[in-house]
Amino acid sequence: MMTPNIAAPEHIAVTLPPTDLLRQALAGAEILLPAGTRVSRAVRHPAAVIPPYVQRTYRFGPPAEFAGTDGRFSDYWMYAAQDLTTALWESGFCTNDLTLPGTFYIPPDVAKKGLIATFTLQTDIRVLDLHGTALSKLGIYDQIHGDHAWCQWFGLRMLEVLAGFSGDAAPLGFRYPSRKHKSYLALAVQSGSLEVWRRHVDVQVTRFAEMPEFEILRADANYAEPFGGGFSLE
Image 1 (tube, rainbow, N blue to C red):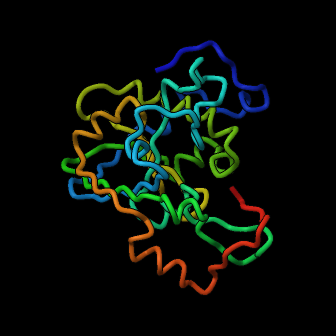
Image 2 (tube, helix red, strand yellow):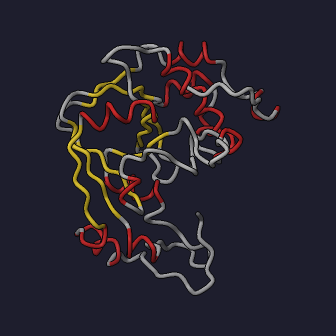
Image 3 (tube, rainbow, N blue to C red):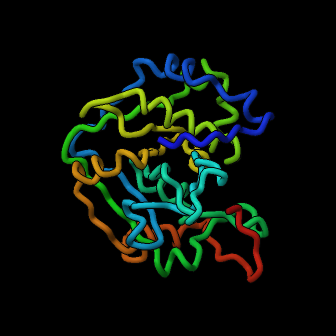
């Protein structure tokens, strides 16, 4: 895990739970994703299916200050979900236009280039379950559903927690509440565990536009293409 001496901004630092208390709240929170479980990931190019590096880190960071001189991050998260709909909303494959309240749409670049990776677990995989009770104990329920700035620093704490596990049964990441698909859970796999993930999953990649779900979404009564110059929530 990275160790640069970069401090969180004061207004964020004072609200982050200490790593020891985070470990304590997550004690016993390991869950098993059994062999045969399917996990979906929505990406815009093939190299991102299991990314060897990232130059943009999204929800759980790390913050931009941790990028190397080449713009890459040494630690990061791969995002996915156990249901396709959550993966679509979390990744921006489905989004909203502020100029058309009550509607959603699929961005043109997603319709043209979007890919859905379906991972089928070939063995049981452990993750930490960042569930509602743990969030309530830690007093961070609102923050975890908020904007990225706080969550990116919190993601560093989760990397520290995961670094405390060792062996083949160590959790590979954590499950957390989706911000864009309420009442559903998404999955973050730490970059240091991606080779283990790769060895233990079967991967099938399909063009989103060729899947039946694509046409079902476009036929939805609330689907509406945005006006030119519209404003996305992304």
